[in-house]
Image (cartoon, rainbow, N blue to C red; front, side, top):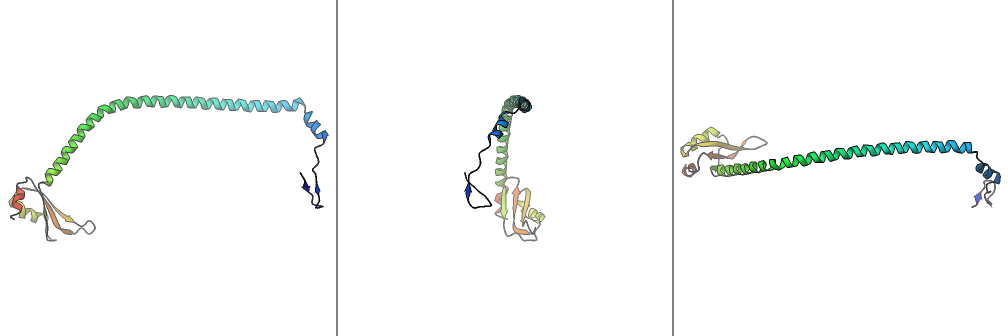
Amino acid sequence: HYLFTSQALSLSRPKPPSKATTLNQANMSTEEKEPAAAKEEEEEEEDLEKLQAEIARMEAEAARIAQETEDLDKSSSAAGAAASTSAAAATEGKKGDADTANKDGHSIYVGQVDYSTTPEELLAHFESCGTVERVTIVCDKFTGKPKGFAYLEFQVSTAMRCYFFV
């Protein structure tokens, strides 16, 4: 290794440490070494205690998770019984879909409805065909004004045949 000095632009070798410096370090008294060793030992003990506390915390968490897993297993077996109940509810939901399809069979579309027509006027007009359960005049969602068509739902599908003659 070479060093540049600020006084001259020549290279010079660094001086090796003197023998007196190395002897002083080697002859450190045992009294100076003992406090350092005692300090390191105390730090190691503190680290060991921290690790043991962390292990205890992790073991407690593992026990809690195991308990929660058991509780979930118990509740999932109870959920199996609830699944059969939900399957029955789904069957009833299909019946509701069938009712909707059935109601669609009782509904008619009425076009060219005047914008000033009221549901009561449509009800009175189609009453001769049968019992009208619902009248829906479709309106624009932004303006709220009628779009010019409507849907009528009859109580029975035979009433729809009369619709063509009205």
